[in-house]
Image 1: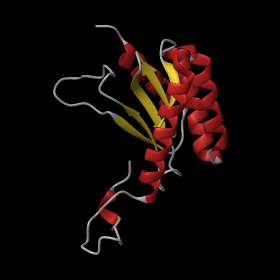
Image 2: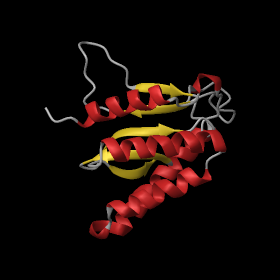
Image 3: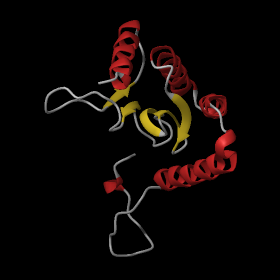
Image 4: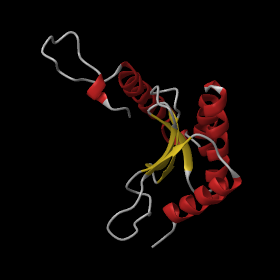
Amino acid sequence: MTNTNDTKDKTAGNGFEGFSDEERAAMKEHAQELKKAARRGSRASKADGESDVLAKIAEMQDSDRFLAERIHDIVKTNAPALTPKLWYGMPAYARNGKIVCFFQSAQKFKSRYATLGFNDDARLDDGTMWATAFALTDLTPDDEARIARIVKQAVAED
């Protein structure tokens, strides 16, 4: 999500800093995703989630689309047990229904870089401090190899 410190709620008139338009749109998308998942119910398959993710990636601008496609391929190859799904309108990958990692396009939140992020279920622990998000502007072969290692670590069993 973006930093909301730059966004003023003009309706309150008291300087309240609220959600940006992009954040509100993401929350609405998430509500729609939850409704869609509920409608699919137990008949939902991994293929349903993947088709949703691929459709969302196809809508992205060129630079974000390239990054999202590469991240999708890296995750599928290195963590095939993860289930693709949309999360706040962005590609994400879950284990047992919980998001492990996600891609956030630069365009969606008007940021200068895309983000590859990891949630609490990712097993990235490294001492008392470790990274849970990475800024992406491009992907070199070395970057892709590093992401593959991080994704493998994120899904490693204890």
